[in-house]
Amino acid sequence: MTGMRRRVTIGFLSIVCLLFFSGMVSLVELSRLSRDTDGILRTNQRNIELAKTMLDAAHGHNVALIRLAVFGERQYDSLCMASLERLESSLQAAQHEALEKSFLDSLAFAATELRLLTDNYLAFGVSERPASKPAAAGYADPVGARWYNDQYEAVYERLTAAIKSYMTSTQSSLAPRTEQMKKNAYRAVTPVLISLSVMIAIVLMLFYFMSIYCVNPIVQMNKGLGDWLTFRVPFAVKGDLKDEVLELREKIDALIALLKQNKA
Image (cartoon, rainbow, N blue to C red; front, side, top):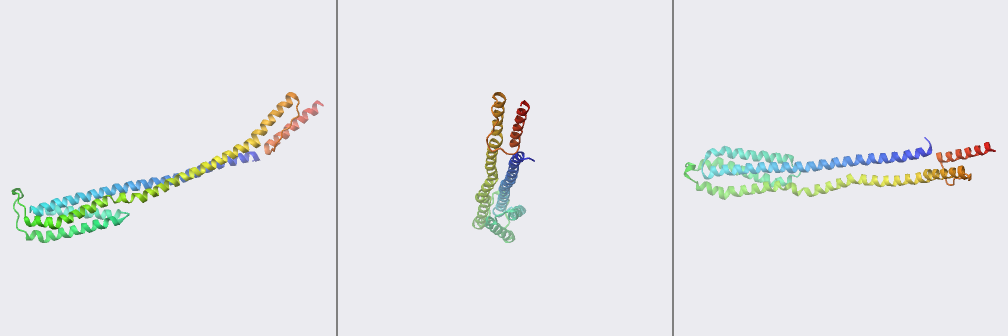
């Protein structure tokens, strides 16, 4: 490959390589950014789902215990235990999936406190209380109501507060993860900006090279050849000519010399 063609080929191949490299780097960084965004959204959605399930279970447990303790409807003991098991199952899922488990400590403590209080009441409180009257009669057991107000209600409020705190825990961890996503976005854009700057420099160099060593000499040779054909002005092209352009001028000089020799 001759000199001029080699230089032009190297210049354009450099641009192609830079475009490919910057595109690949940007694609990798954008893929990472997309994964991080999806992860944040999935984590937030999952936390909300688990928190909603725990709130529903806690509410169901509260309603069942009110019917059981205050109104003496013992058929609600199975619903009470089912709601508690549902709460504990959701809590175990949250503990298994959570990246930051510090938000779950108070929730786990409140759930354990509720479990102990419920088991203790079902084991001793129900058996020691007198038989209840039908709920339709509006009977409310003062002992059960006092137990609910003095012991259970405070535990239930701590549990619901801990569940709500867990529900909003994802928002508190969004700041550092958002900052990391910002850095990933900059990393995705930086290769493109660098490649763009380098490509601009290469294009300007190619323009300078093509103008100095190709375009201007060809323009001069074209004008000089036209002047020689029209006015018989001596053909002379000044400048630093290289490679194929130099060969072209030498061949034109040889052709003009041959024509002069034939005329002579």
